[in-house]
Image (cartoon, rainbow, N blue to C red):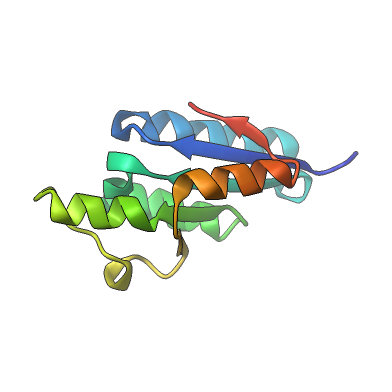
Length: 118
């Protein structure tokens, strides 16, 4: 069977628990060898990259091959708006940044990834 390629897009903070649960279930069902998972956070959902409880789950998933991406524009906007400030320098090492989330979504989908918005 061909590897499944899935992009999870999270732009609403309250959707993180559902997304992480979906990813865990997907890995259980398809197996780590059967799926490539990318998670892209933009908008206010990037603040989850500063939440220790969520980071623990994300780190475990990253060790199983899941890639986590943060929109640089959103990180900057959250800092400038007075909300909690997470910048690139204090992101966990397993989280990658992309210049613009929307562009990354388009590029990843053009590589054949299914789009999931929990």
